[in-house]
Image (cartoon, rainbow, N blue to C red; front, side, top):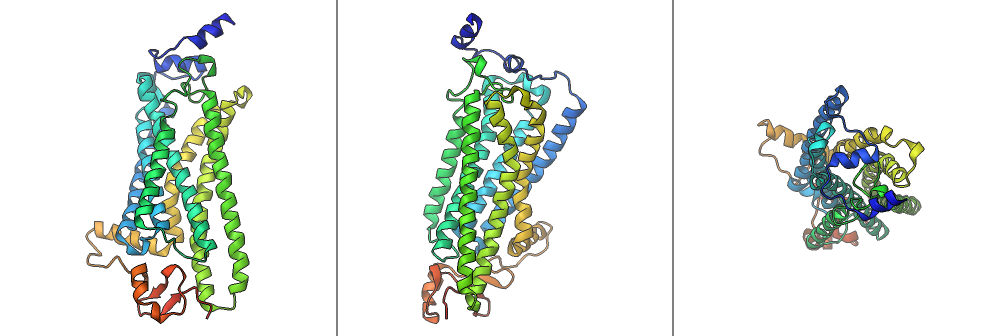
Length: 369
């Protein structure tokens, strides 16, 4: 008891990272093993692909006016969070394995904080997307009426929250002065922080799943009343297509991150028989792969996004120059200002937004005839 009390009252700020790893029972090999080379090699490969793929997504959203709406700005910010995650994992790959021994506590907290920040940015951004979809769908709109300024402020708030939560352990919620409270997977993090972190994210996942379940129930109920109207059927199909894309993004995120969060929660609860270190690497790889999933989902679900990707890649190869980005696949979305000038052509327009064919015919309208 006296030894434990002394450990609680004494701080170990000047100790090496290896000291905390040894205390927690997490072994760091001083020599490079075959498994270390494989992990770092695969990790670096995935990181480079993640970074390039999400740069491609952000570029497509910027240059194609078809995507200049709040929902796509938020999806672009999600790509920015995935890009940040790729950079964070790239930094991790150069500071893992035997390299971990050389880290100072400050650099170790930086390494972990970057990963925590990227996860928080993705989670909060997905929550914002869920709320945006809830607001627009329940008001029978395709796109939100939020101004660009409000969307930018929302994105700024997302990153502010992400950075602050990423700094929480560095600002004091650690175990440098309480060794018995140190976790096993993150030996300088307090187990209480891991419980807080895991429960907060799992609770947020549950809220988002509940929101999307309610949206799908509403759309199905509403579609029965709209089934007799061709234009409304097209509206419903467009809304459902976008909803399915966003839901696939959320589903991939939950699937990739839930195992890791559960393992962190078990570690925070000090579940010794759970052998959390046995599953740590697998959970890390699965979480890293999530940042690669969204570009794949966009390519599979969104034909306009897929064609924009193709044109970007062709332009990099010196082909496909001179094409217009504002109109893709013969389809474009009118801005609210343009709709104001064309309002005399329709009896009712939802949210000032209609999907138009390039020959001027209505494809999407909320009018019921």
